[in-house]
View 1 (cartoon, rainbow, N blue to C red):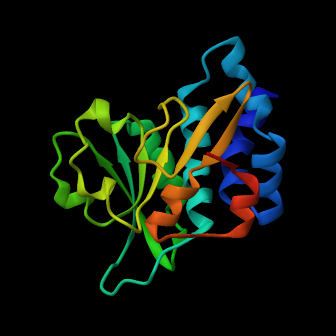
View 2 (cartoon, rainbow, N blue to C red):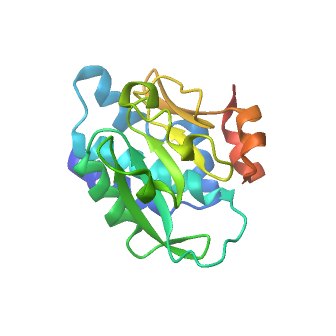
Length: 197
């Protein structure tokens, strides 16, 4: 059964319909997979696949103002290098689009210049910006950048959406004030699923 779940988890999440998204977020469809964390550490591949699916699907429920001259929709991972998560995101978004643009995945760490991060539409914190030395990164303060914190990252003052492990599932929290200030539009379906902070 475990191998069946492993094969089914990622493709199912990457192609969620609104109804499917509701059932995943609201009713804890992930519970059997996440429950493995209670008994033993979750396989890194599965946990990365789960995060990748959440990142992509959360981004689908936001709208950005159109920008001229941008050829890709950039999702940036902020923190230490995580090749497994980068690979899962690249595989999962290879033939998909966000905002009618092909998706590009970038890993940003403290050795990178902020130039590469300048086009990021989504920043995913794999480590708190305070701990990774990124508090001066302009994208932490720009409007129209969706900032999401990973389940194991404590809520950041910079994020608008937090993934939090509660019991045996991931719960999404949205910071209403930060989201309002971002200039991004979240679809009502997402706001009905996420808890308010």
